[in-house]
Image (cartoon, rainbow, N blue to C red; front, side):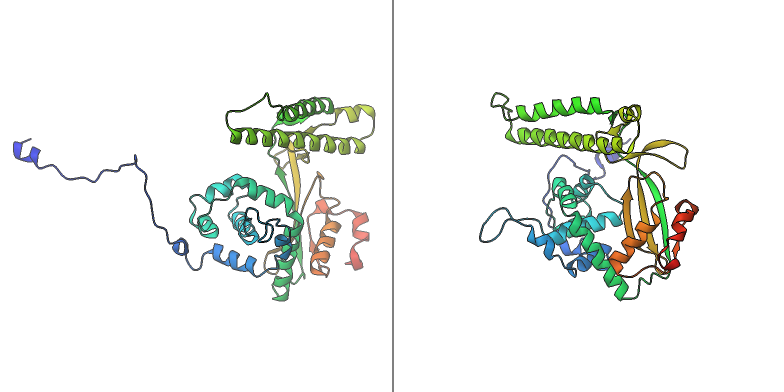
Length: 322
């Protein structure tokens, strides 16, 4: 290389990732005008959310920390479900970088505990919200109930085989969990960080609650079994106690739930959902009809289901002989 070429080096703007940056963000322009998140926000805002606001304890008179707007939490969950996301941790993570989630929150950070607790504590109110949506769709003629398709699917629980325990083992774990929770109040057991102490206390209380729930589910399972040996062999998962062992299409067995879905054939809209512990679909057709009738105040004219739902006894007692 000549001396002239060596001195004439190209100027390059190299990437520098060892820095912090402040960026101005126009929140309204994070997503387009036709984005589904906007439609979900508008739809949820048109519903009657009064039951969600009534449970908020903080107020202008009493003070307290402002609560997240129920419209926001509902919209986050609805949009998350539409994207196939069912984890509170994943929703909270998406709020940090996903434009649609950031638009919904207005760039606010929403803790995953807030999301998870809201879904559990407001289950009854959310169920009523589902009824409101179905009623609105029915009024617009999008749900006819002329033909309803019924189907079930087995969903594997997030539980390892090691969590599947008998009563004696669960009792032992529960006793140790209660002892640890009691020790949290001992002033001799001080942590260096109050935040770490709070997190540890919460984790231990949650573990105790899971074990108590597992013991309760085990007792229900034992009540359904006959014989002392069968009862002593009964087991449940300590991490997902309501799950039951079920057969899957691949021939395997695993801790699962049986999800039942009723869909109006006219526009493919879901009109009924339930999750059961039953390993088969034999007894699920009539409850599905009753759920639809309760929500929409009319019976489906025709139910279409596979042979796993039918028995001669149930065909005889079909409502109105249909």
